[in-house]
Length: 297
Ligand SMILES: [Zn+2]
Image (cartoon, rainbow, N blue to C red; front, top):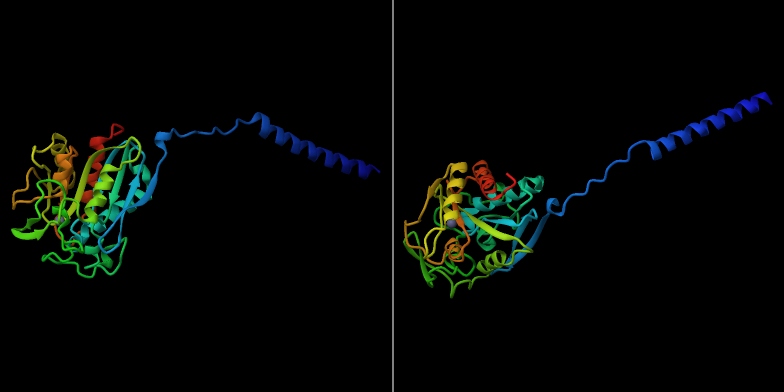
């Protein structure tokens, strides 16, 4: 009998102890605070198709951040032999995907890694995302895959002093039947004109190779003041030479000139060679643009 009473006491004691712990957790201990993030700090990463090339390949755009100040980075305008501009763009996509908080809260970065996918297939054995190992023809100076599948130099197909025949290194090149006749150029037009919500396009950067320089842009009204600022900022951070005006040979219908004509600062970044990706230089260059445009830095 005494044993049973003692056993009941132990069970009762254990129950009371459990109840006490529950009361302590529920009533006495402070509750964890639910921290609500302001909408402006919610990080967004998304991908969409902004167009289709002449041969039916998707032209993709990656978007990072939800801030209103937007910059667009473009690789692959001259496709094939400028493949390093495409690899660089994909490296930037990986870098921002790894930690989207690298984009300040008041900024959005959009990246079009490959504006001329038909051209890139002339040197690579893979479609979509490419790395250096996917490129079969790494070094070429004759311009393999520079043009789109219609034989048009895309960077002559935009609406700034457009002419049906333009030039590249002094030789004639096809510029399309009219401005934006090519689907790849239209894809860029859609990206520039179709920003979501209250986003405002502050600048566009085009990656090319290989002149080891950062060029300002203009059409017929001179270089925009902000264009000069960001050319110097990018050049200072990356080490490329800033060049206020391109006068090696006359160019018509270039994309950066079209953007200048509609009041959007644009710069052309030319890598040093056709075979080097120059990641650190360009990471620092893009950081310099974020420092320039973001009020949070
Ligand atoms: Zn180029």
